[in-house]
Amino acid sequence: MPHLILVRHGQSEWNLKKRFTGWVDVDLTEQGKQEALKAGESIKKIKLNIDYFFSSFQLRAINTLKIIRNTLGDDKQFIRAWQLNERHYGSLTGLNKDEMKKKLGEKKIHEFRRSWDIRPDPLDRKNPYHPLNIEVYKDIPKENIPDTESLKDTYERVIQFYKNEIQNKLLDNKNILISAHGNSIRALCKYLFKLDKDKISLLEIPTGNPLLIDLDISLNIKECFYLDKERAKNLLVF
Image (tube, rainbow, N blue to C red; front, top):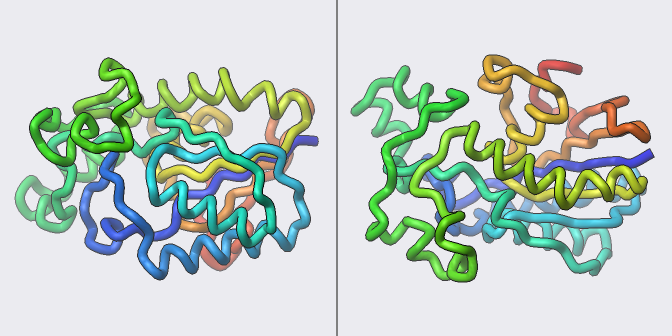
């Protein structure tokens, strides 16, 4: 039976500073690197061979995956996909979450972070944090680069990629590991767990803790749990 492992990247430099990161390309902190190492060790313990590795285009997810592969002693190439990127936070990008709560109110910031279909205002395309001005995205067609996104927007690109590139591999009984982000993993969980838009707003994804999903031949979920039980979050459905 196939297995899908979802790993949110380890703590990033902007996680530590409580800044809205979105598509900005920041690296892991030392704690984040240790979380990635521990994630790799947790996966190694279950002795599961990974057939395919995927990550987003973003450094924090890529480096998390590299640390995991090194820990597993697995040098397979991995597939980088912008569709697995974090949600774009629009005009909130780069701003401090606590400061914005004081400015806009906690309720409004919670709405921006957890609502299903509400987008922050667009980020000015001249802003250095806009993906159009970040080197890693230079080969992505401009029409695919957002100015802002809701979770619904993130869901649509993530699930289209999942259906096109990942689903058939799982149906072929292959084990897959995805290193991505809080919101791109939440989008996948909404689809896989069949969560409604109210339940998905409650789902928290911890950094650097592999979520192991055991599937049957029809890709129905048989079992699902975090490998690091001490840092596990409530999955709402299991």
